[in-house]
Image 1 (cartoon, rainbow, N blue to C red):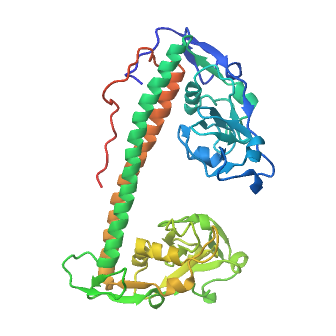
Image 2 (cartoon, helix red, strand yellow):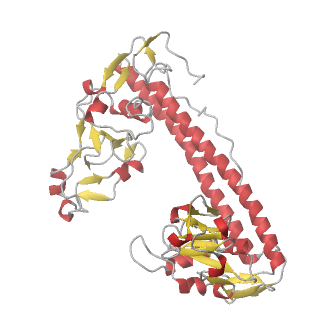
Image 3 (tube, one colour):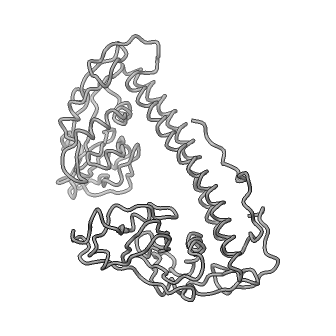
Amino acid sequence: MAKYKAYPEYKDSGVEWLERVPREWDVINIKYLSQVKRGASPRPIDDPKFFDDDGDYAWVRIADVTASDTYLLETTQKMSALGSSLSVKLEPNKLFLSIAGTVGKPCITAIKSCIHDGFVYFPYLRIPNKFLFYVFAGEQAYKGLGKMGTQLNLNTDTVGGIKVALPSNNDFITNIVNFLDHETAKIDNLIEKQQQLIELLKEKCQAVISHAVTKGLNPDVPMKNSGVEWLGDIPSHWLCTKIKHIALLTPKKSSVNFKNNDECTFIPMEKLKRNSLVTDESKLIRDVISGYTYFEDDDLLLAKVTPCFENKNIAVAKGLVNSIGFGSTEIYVLRPTEKIRVNYLLYRLQEDNFIRAATAAMTGAGGLRRVPSDFLLNYPIAIPPKPEMDAIVAYLNAQEVHYDLMEKNATQAVQLLQERRTALISAAVTGKIDVRDWVAPDTQDIEEPEEATA
């Protein structure tokens, strides 16, 4: 904040989050700026008579606010006349605050909305609602309201008891709001550019993987028709086969490898991630030998259920206790034969055409659709000779390191920009910077973080 000037004089506010504030500012509880009221909802909330796609008022859930930035622009449901009469109606341009789920997140309605008791609102606010929005968005007003290590707990009394600092001149409040609108918009634009870069890097990395495992690394090699429409031409010396011919699916337990009193690694579904397997949990084999999926070191583990499958949660088992593991029945185990390297198969099953085809073949309803075993076994795959597999794996390992580093740099840039945004908001609403004479410049003056080139 060094480029912004401070006020000439400050005083101790006596409030932890405000610290020192400009001498001429007032410190006041929110409840003296407006009564704080809680939302309401009809019961039972899942009764269809309370909802109507053609209703006048949108039904606001915590997820809708979590997905919103400053303004609530849309929700997934609308309320019927009966439902809205049993909730709390807010007209556009009204401030409300979540006190459950994403606790403490403010939002301003851009549409006619109904809020439930997971929110509070400010019906008689005597200051511009955007200023109080920024007070909450600065994330410091909640200091001291939650004990260390516990979740923040807000209600009408705690929100009403929060002290804020206000300039004595309403024109100065408006200037602070205009300043923050302008400056945060610039930062948000930079954040959006970095997020777009992250998506581009992911797409480019995936394109590199897809090309290498379907076309190889030599652009001059003779090609042949694979006989598979989506696969197209493949190097003429590659073998076109099916997964069932190069790997065993869910291999049987090998009793000679362990005793029931031995320890093994246990892998819950949440410990299987893309190219990552967390092996920090162990159990006695006798406790997991029934009802769980068995695997060994160097087996390939593949999530079979959505959304884990679509997130490409696939990894090679390594570092298992006694080289043995058990895990969720929602995991497929593929044990490569001598025809294929496990790390090549790992990359091959991350390829987008495979993910799309497998997703389309899923069976089941709702959020628990699964990839059928027959689809996996009969999926066509083209494989090069082993030396070429090793070269492709080494190349893709290096490419992933390259793209992962650029993605990490872009992610860090997003984090720094978000921290800068929060700090700027907090500084402005507590008077740490003086923006009374601020006028919107013609050019943007925030330095953009150095972008990685994909």
